[in-house]
Image (cartoon, rainbow over all chains, first blue to last red; front, side, top):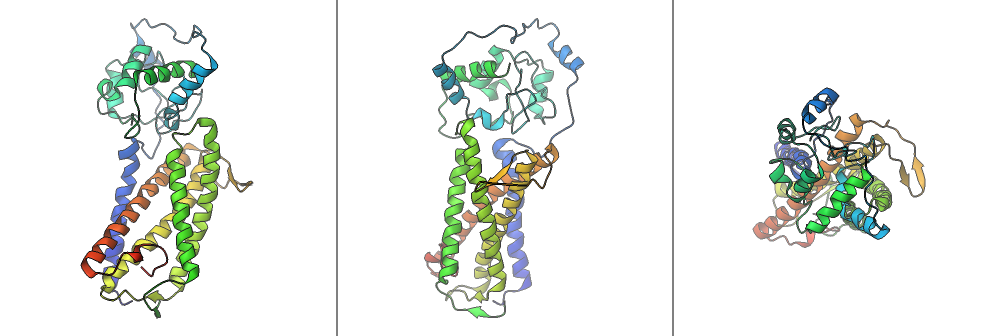
Length: 177
Length: 180
């Protein structure tokens, strides 16, 4: 083929421009960023954010027992969440932050996770995760923290229901203690 | 690439390679979009399949790239300008190169995550240490290249339909086994 070097460069430039666009897609689609951070919110700051809230220790009391079938149903309800979040102590941040012992903490304090400005503002404005605020967030996350990057529902056609939300919250409380 | 082959159907070797790569890509695509909706304790099986098929794609795409540079370039179908035909071939080269690079990055990502790569029962020795500085950017890049495949394939078909509309060169050439 006798194609000029200029044509070849043009073709490559067009295809590389699409590659440059593709680099932004995980951020646009999943809200994930390609780097971590050394930032850790100091315990003194967490204490300040919780001062005056008089919150109980949500993990001190055991939860009411449920059947194996109910626990399995909760686990299924939480399946998609586990793609982005770990629940175990010391679990890594993935697309979303590690959620170990999240209940009773201020928003956006998981160590080394790159939070959106929306979440940082929510934290600074006093958002603390309680069963009530988490329930509201699961039901309508963009209403509770406008412009946050969490993609939930995760896909078109995903069936959201109050029962599923309840199961997810209960599973979160059980598995993050 | 000074010699040129006649336009038309590819040899059996290239045709089989094209269909095998297309099939493996389709299986990998189905595999990865099913990962989030699969129970946590079954995801390891899907990853095992993903890693093994990914390695095959990596190797086959590398061979295909080698053939591309080794073999003489075909002539464009009658009526299709050479510059337009060259863009078809550029898309294919980028696609195969991306298959290769994505596989390498995928393995680095898995090692950065501290995950063993088991290929057909054999565990590959980790060549990269576990660490967030590797896991996070490599995972992001692996995902980016997944989106890039879809873009390249979209460009491939949109441009192919445009060429057929403009130059009446047929649509069969968009499938494996034709000399683009």
